[in-house]
Image (cartoon, rainbow, N blue to C red):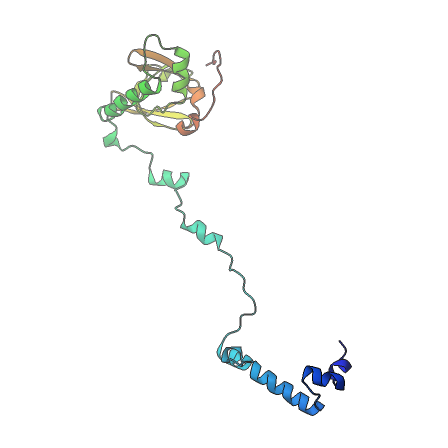
Length: 223
């Protein structure tokens, strides 16, 4: 609607019908200002000057990014291989290198293997037992070296007290700690009269890694 029509005077024929009458522009402007002043409430919180004087105005907000380095620092960090060697964590003290001290561990291991193989019986399938032993934990087992490229190891018998990726540490009945390499050696394990031969080359893994590995059946391993 054009401004001229808004400011135009009301025709005389409509004055009586509408019950209103036109007024001069000066009076109309004064009436409009007075009406707006009374209709609009000026609250203190909408006062721009007051807002700028007593309050901080936030023009924009973004979430601070989380510091990932702090999150990582909260996690407990384990010792590395060098620190473990320096602290001699894997070394057995001489006063603890006694065969009788590890006999209870052997008894626990025997029961563990029997449960793992669903009970060792004369009718047990040797291949089934062999597959179970390949994935078993050997801490506490009594093993005997029956074949080896190094003839000095042959006939050595003892309880496994530590198993590493490439070697067995055993305690003999003479209370001597010996390190037997797995590679190029064949070991005999006896459980309640059941004798099983294992090839050390298949055991060149940690016990935790070996338990999840699938082994392939092989004929022979040259020594």
